Length: 94
Image (cartoon, rainbow, N blue to C red):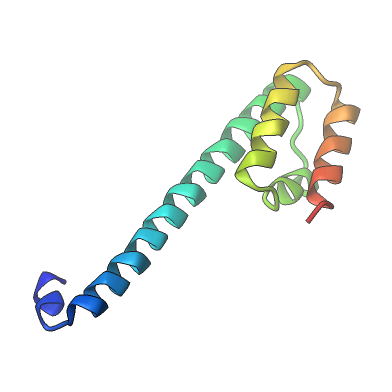
């Protein structure tokens, strides 16, 4: 990659760096989102003894901020009904 950069103009190198930064940021965000989903799944499975596929599918639609809110609500001790309703409502916001 470094060899290829030597053949680029300074403007092209700058544009390439912007793209790389964007990819790295997106990768970190996706990694954070995946880990948040894993934590929620483990917690829900342990607390409620279930983790239906439809709940997982709805959670996968949520942003990192929405997942954070779900996690906080879980720790506040909501019931299964409250949890599943919250996930459904959050996934329908987009």
